[in-house]
Length: 378
Image (cartoon, rainbow, N blue to C red; front, side, top):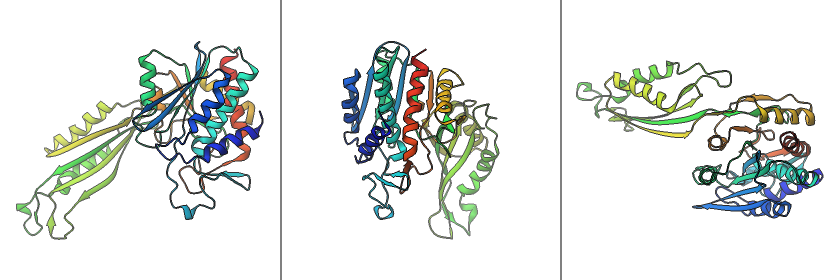
């Protein structure tokens, strides 16, 4: 295979307008390519989400590539320099929605798997792809459901590469070996509405909650560790007031979020927040939403195999990082002991004129193939 194969498949996938939760037959194209090489394709549909599980072989170790065919909406079409679903090359860049996040990664791994299997038909272990169309959406009928289905039938895998765009300035400079958890809360403080001229007849919820917010903002929740920064508490929205300047509001609603490390748990964070609020005898409601727990893959076989592949292909010594938002790695880590994210430069993701460097496609594919070699040709 040549770089033209990766470029052709990347363009083919970009041309399919697979805005969440649509797949636009991207997964069918992957199955069509890989089934002749011995991959067994299984489509798992949950509600309006299409998922694909492709696996070649049953032996351990099993190396899985995980990714998503869905993309975020384009935004204003008139802001794009070319149609977002017409892959377009300009000045050494390939433009289109999903170019970086993450159709190039999917194409690169599919071609890498083709090359690896063609060169090593009797390789040890197994190779698989777990592809969803629900990563950019609510993420409730995608990877999490596939992982539950695989776990229910005792189908295990040992290593997972998630094709998220992790590189910052140069292909391979950063990979993610974990992610922080995300715990959100909506806090409603109850007061009593009244006239500002008669404060003794009202109870101002903003005044009531202010000491609690100051304490929560100043609290050191943990000190982090070698892989994670300290857990942080951030207020994202504060709603109160009747729209008039002479009315004491009857309630205040505060949205906040914890991005938390493995040094804290959802239970410990919740308990400490309730402790601060209860100490002030506040009347309140608090609704919690756990978007994802933190996961961490310490340095080991997968990080070494990937790091060696990146170094051999690009000469770059990669850096392990846990920064950024959540990903489907949080679901996979519950059933797979080693999960690492790696993909192209992420500077343009979710933006108008999203793009990838055409020259990065071949090295990206080669890094994935070299990683398979490092893990399965021992």
